[in-house]
Length: 101
Image (cartoon, rainbow, N blue to C red; front, side):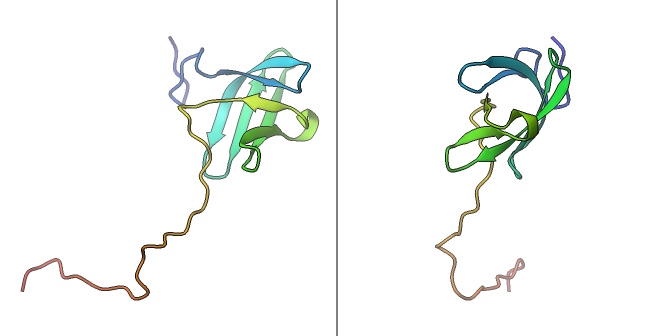
């Protein structure tokens, strides 16, 4: 069992991507949940494949030469982050002393 920099074993970093009729295999190389970026290596085609997170369809969409492909990736059910606004914040901040008076 060998781990890569993502802390995944060989079987954990192997994923599929497809365009409906073709199902291909690739190895996960880079994952950024903040920007919604995924980079995979296809050893059979000898190329790097990039995917971007599409929040409207909740899926990884291919870019460049693999446009129209969708990656079947599930990393501990972690999806890229989405911006939320906290509604329980008061209009004015209050300061609190760390030291008792």
